[in-house]
Image (cartoon, rainbow, N blue to C red; front, top):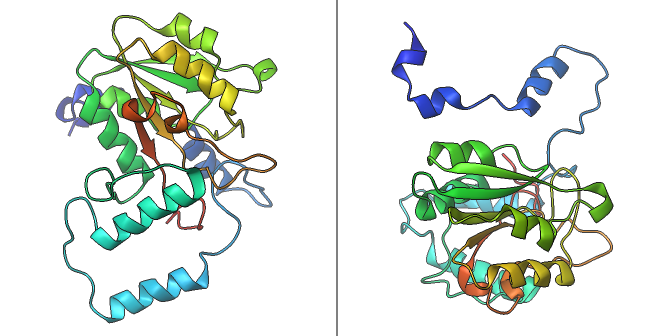
Length: 242
């Protein structure tokens, strides 16, 4: 059976992850040190493991509301306010997904029409571009530079915007570079975006893994809250990647 004739053209066009190819090669080698996956080096805290086991024992395995458990959404809103000064209504502005990747995919599909352009600072997480391609978007890479600390600059952003630009992915704190956008960097980006209809997808999954500086969300910058979709989660901060 020729699966290339059965699968959609979009699916066939997606290239396999280069990181996963390295994993396959490394699995056949000895004494390999992996620097390839964004994963904490500690176990999930016992309090979380215990709560999960207790929930299963008590049979809490039923369907939830589409947006997720209401108490969980409330605690997420409290956490975002406490840690990052972000205020969201848990009833209408918090959505719980099965992981950060699903959240990113949902955000892209919610705002992208075929032919829209997505601006993507690189290097970055390997799944952004395939998700954009599956939504029939045109993904426009913006290579960040070592001399800029691998941060996205306002000049680079301005040069990449076209009438078809719909979404800017802002993957900071960044994997794999470790770059962090400081307030002045975010303010410069915001100045470029203010007179546009471009939406920002701010992937902040590494927000708790910053060293020597505190993460700030672009949603904290004046006029950016209304146009920013914030993605965060438990996987990196609490070692819950799988």
